[in-house]
Length: 340
Length: 88
Image 1: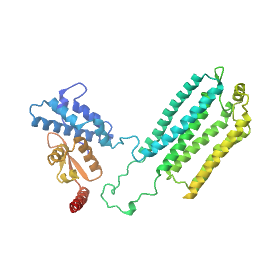
Image 2: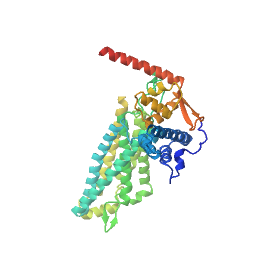
Image 3: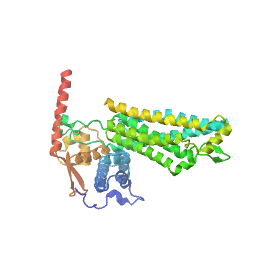
Image 4: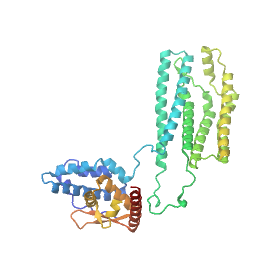
């Protein structure tokens, strides 16, 4: 169905006001986001409807000037953006009721775990550095605020995208045209709420870890005479750190694939999870066992302030943590897979 | 449902709005016009431009599918009404 060629300019447009008549501006505002192939059709119909409305008002009340009638008609139609959204069927919310509980849970979990840990770590590092107490508090407060903003933004973005990715299905059954039969049952849940929360949490954690690895190099909290000392050995950037960052991306990709596949743990996912976990843990464990992870400059700098600091012990702790985290993650995946 | 019931005869947006209004359905234009488009997209209505009059108007009319859905909805309505009556 095509719209007829634009007819003679409508009455309202002939008033020759700067920037077009209110009707023209209203039609423009309401249709600018409608897809191009329909826009002219919708605009023409809407303009006619508005003119019909104006006419009905002026004939019902002869005292009304055309401008007043136009004004009243447009007021009755309401916000053109809302009308536009109805035409395009655009989602008018960021996170809908279906995802909202998961969203709140994930956001809360991340905020109450990540933020205090990060703030405490930074405050501890600054104290060891011998900063003023006030400066320590200020730094920690600033970092807390930044973390809250960053985490909230990325989590919200992830959920908003998920909301838009699963568009509402418009089947004949949902319209009530065909009677419902068991054949219409959906496939095994695309992904349960728990698994979405799990996936988003994991991806956000991975992003934070990756961010920290980059951050410690450029914005290390440790300074010596105005020069920042990276926490990790800068020579690792030539090979090992890119490898480790790559494995983080790999793990994040795995989470997305798992979620898209239905979010249920299968034996194969558990195996892949063990492998990607190992891919991340192996370089870390090897570097820690060779005492190659920490920046030697950092170690000697800390020893100036705190003679009890021992790089070897720190590497042992890192090694043990990496093994423990990998083992727990692998065990967690297998136990979930075998339960199904 | 009221929209579907009214559109056994072809009508254009504003006329339909007035008719629904006089029948006691306080529908607003900003709900009705997009609704007509949606129903058309779902194949329950079909439309045609009529350029015979001073203003070109888009006339909507129910399709066979629209009629089928209306009948189904009316049956449901009747059943509900009968059930409520039995409870009184």
